[in-house]
Length: 214
Image 1 (cartoon, rainbow, N blue to C red):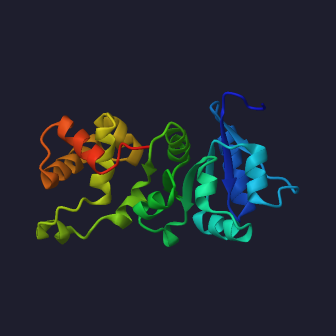
Image 2 (cartoon, rainbow, N blue to C red):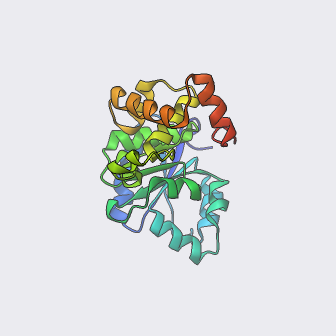
């Protein structure tokens, strides 16, 4: 198969200039290879079956319209490839909304190129990656923490999930482009809310809520 050994990436967006730019970016790396739709790809399911992408980077609004036109479900697409929501920041929903739907990554179209490439590789490796700008949408207002609520913010949950997976603070910080100290703060807040004391406690909690299930 062509590009054997490389992560095969399919970009889906209504803007052909953006698609061409992302394909050029993807092909500029040694580990990734961009896939291109052709005139014969009238239906998305046929194109995906022919191209066999590993990761699909798609504008979620455009993808929803495309799936509706070809009477295909997002879960059907997810069964064939990992999905990254490539969002316009003005139209972005909370990151949790995309993950719940089946996306493994959420990044905005304003994200720096190295960050997008790293997100593609991380998602392909099985991680969940959510851009800092999208995480900010999901956080409760500052006074929400003073109400005594035990509900985790999106950032706190993201950090705790990855701690349960065995990731180091520096790795988690790189994923969401924050300092390791800030990530430590989110971990501290999350463990305090849930009364977790050790990593074993975190792993047990993660298993109890289904974070470590596949």
